[in-house]
Length: 311
Image (cartoon, rainbow, N blue to C red; front, side):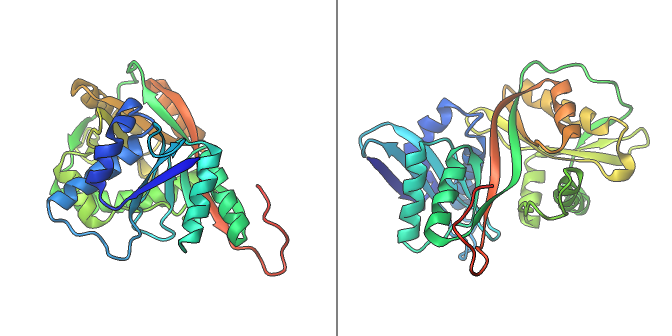
């Protein structure tokens, strides 16, 4: 028996699921960081977009008195509003798909742990038609011992509100360039770009660092989330094309990572498995793989097509 409990209040969800998130804070970093931020925004009176289907789900295999065995959320502001799933049984993932289908909520994209994410979307495909397609394979890394990186002229400076136009432009370019560097069409992964207000808030909280060259010009960017359950996630990392292959990104990530370690945080990040350059950079710094995840979408089934197929 699979029991599902839904929440539209992030504070209530954290009250119930907090101990589960804290038991594996690296694996749960996305859910913890996003939910904590939305809870804090709610407390500060920051409104949510009314059109965003925002909710959290808690899973128990064995009824409502059983231990929590899975967690998920749907909080993305941009269509197709993908679901994000942490590990859960395949039975639970399929049950969740059937439940959402019964209540008329069609989910056409999912990110997160395998095999739960694939099982969920394959069951949705069975119910609604369509083809499950993997958009991106990602790998979660945690920093072990920070390695000594090649010395690069320059220094890390914390971004300020005056840097918002530059940060906004580089974050937007990061989303598109990441696809191109991985051999996909620009925009294929449909990564959600933070809003200007979200970027400004992160900057004001000290979340963005800029690597300056010897002349004081910004040449690379590295950001990190505020810690949740003692874990901070580095992202995004971006260097414009004209400044690449000088070691700026490695230097920026190493500096940001060192600062977080000094603050007592565990540090993690995600990489696109199709981008060997970034994977190599982070492993040389001292990041070690934790788990593989994926981003998947449900493509509509062409007219007169046969049964949904697995790709």
